[in-house]
Length: 311
Image (tube, rainbow, N blue to C red):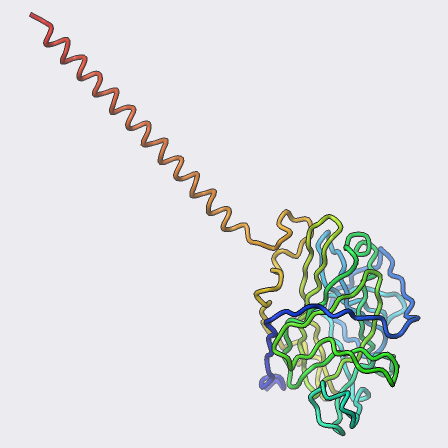
């Protein structure tokens, strides 16, 4: 039986005003070339530099994983990418009220993808540095946590130095969608805390206002295998249909410039147009029938009049 058979499904359904994810660690220099390829096939990333971020693929706004763990960086489909969080990521929750937002007792061991790179652990952040994205978005993007499936909770937070207060961004324990704002040409890393080992699916949306006045939106699911005992096959086998909250943009309207920037369905409009065409056709038929009836009546009356006038 899969370990995630008893996993919880958490759907976050109420949006809130996005927080600003300020860059806490200057010096994360990175540039992304316009010709960086999109890799195909499954990949497991267990250590090294990884970002999530928007990119255009065949003119379609998408959410992808930027894999910098190899000599040449590539983009990857989240559905084919496994982020492994090994036992080397285990840390002890500090006995400090500032970390109460984790919802975990002090002294418990949890799995942490750290904000500051640990060479033995995957280093996960986000960027808005794809060249076409930078040309087309208006000021920045909104990253939203839509839902989580996993044996425990997931918390993402920023902290600028050891003495600054932590800034929670996403908490799967909260029953509402949580968003934060990332400026254009931003590259940021954060702390990701997993309370239990096992498989986690984290549904994320990236949306933006474009310089054209249209909107772009895309969703993707990050796949984590937490703990050395969690197999890659198990992690790739788990699926979760995490619904998009009603107040979020429809994934069907992901494509920028598709003529329906608000994400609304064309079906109601099509139904109205078809209904109007049918009504018009019926009206035309009725008019033709009435015209023919009137013509026949006129002919009968003329014939009768002529008959009455004969001796």
